Amino acid sequence: MGLFAGLAWLVGRLLPLGRRGWLVFGGLAIFSAAAEWLQPLVGRSFEWTDVLYGWAGAASVCATWRWRRILRWAALSALCLVPLVWEGAMFGMEFHAFPVLAKPGALWAERGWSLNGVDLSISRRKGFRLNGLPRGKGGAYPGAFREPACKDWRGTQSLNLELFWPEAIPAIFAVRVDDRPENPPYAERFQRELSVTQGWNSIQIPAEEMAWASGGRPMRLDDIRRWGVFLVSDVCFDYFLIRNVRLERKEEGP
Image (cartoon, rainbow, N blue to C red; front, top):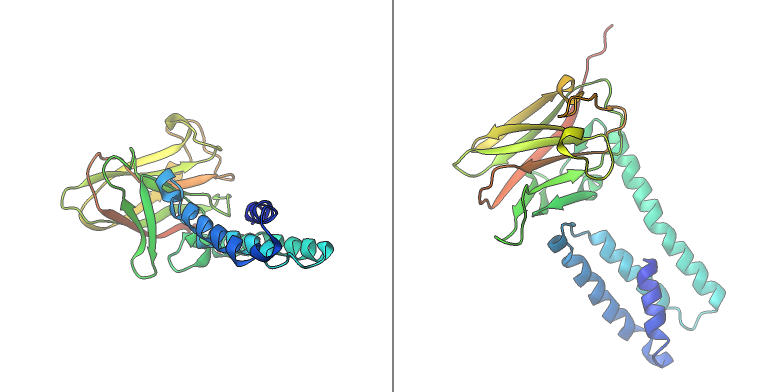
């Protein structure tokens, strides 16, 4: 939001006062939408909220050129708080939904995805659809990753999810869990590979397995940084689906 407010101010200062309104806002609105639309090409997902933030930032300047400076800064400051409030609300909703990790139809689950070699569309009924990119535009290990709001996975029994594979030929997928930031190497993360067949596949990974990284060290289940699902097999595909991603809690005794 602040970036587009700054761009509106810089561009508007170069134009006569009468042309600083809709002309500048229209150009920046198109630029904001185009920049977000191109993000899947570099591994990031399209977010309508980012487009709206850009429009709001540009509008806060373009609509207030004749206001007193203190009022303009007050309006811009109030708008800048909107993303913080929104992100806080989304975080709170996701935290409250735990042990659910991804739920189609929930606002909080439509954001925060890191994509590799796929783009994402969401259906409340079918789940999270990972669409393959054209040959040459994707990359190795296409899949999706997410940082959980609740990082403490202790006291859980298993990680459960459903994965739909539409192709007739079986494929190898991997479920990955990181307890370290950035992109830890294979030996420093938990990763389980499994074979899936055509149709819906129910996947359940016991917490006892997730307690150990691939290299043999204990995982910090109290500080999980990221989880993800990706395709290991080097095969052509149109899409695959994931849904009902949740942690199963251990049953507490009487």
